[in-house]
Image (cartoon, rainbow, N blue to C red; front, side, top):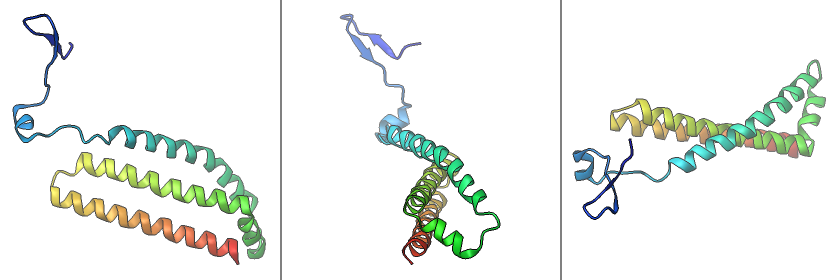
Length: 139
């Protein structure tokens, strides 16, 4: 069933599919859904490409001593890819949590509090990871 109808002159007129309450409140699209959708997909692809590399890196360090592990992580490409992995992982997690909170939490005050906690937790996790990678790579 199409949402396009014809008026008396035969010209197409789009029918508003919102409820009367939504029309009265002026609520409509937040205009950010497409961007959110694509960034979730981009970070998922980046993570899908980096996880096999990370597993291989971790497997190659089984039984290694601390100095050789530090040396492996300090190699420029490994540090760069670990940084990309950490940023992508926390960004992807943040967007996923946002979607879950928006879909399943209906009390506005609880939703705001959980969104804030998700932002803080993901930001702190990303900063801690970046600090650890930089400290290992630069020392």
